Figure 1 (cartoon, each protein chain N blue to C red):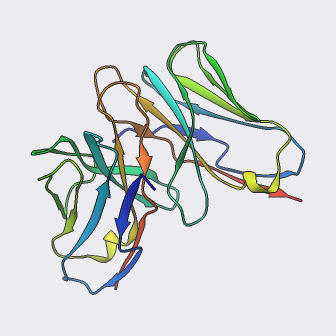
Figure 2 (cartoon, each protein chain N blue to C red):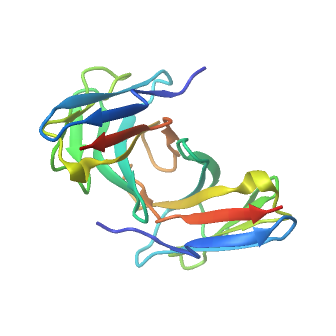
Length: 111
Length: 113
């Protein structure tokens, strides 16, 4: 089955640094979602995007729906230790309830 | 608190045993689904349901059965456990329709020995 490519797979950053990650697909999506998963927990929805070019923020997090509708980006500003976790993107095709998930970006923040 | 409840949180099975992973939600969501999470593989859809009495297969359905007799419950049955089914299983629910994000349970960590 199709999965989305997330980049990078993992990253170590210093506390206070900004973080960027992206998600790419070979097909067009109508909705993009970004989730965060803490260790031992289920993913929690961070941001939802519904229109090409849309830019949406949630605190220090900003996500963008790519203009081509085949990609999406997530930025975290001024990272803190609690940003540690796995970040997943998910895309939804037109006319379907199902989401396709990316393989995840594992973030580790060094204090 | 409202949400998706999964039981058990941990389970060890012997090869060939069967068991049911329970999932219940109290948000009146029509759509429910089961995913498995394996290292480096992200979340893969096992089965899903768009309402009571309606289920369909996802991308990795072999070895699993589901039923949806009520809106609230969506159990996942392992028919004859195999070591390849060692994984973390997540149940998720949402309102039906385009653009609604999922609410996930906290997962069941299953080990098959």
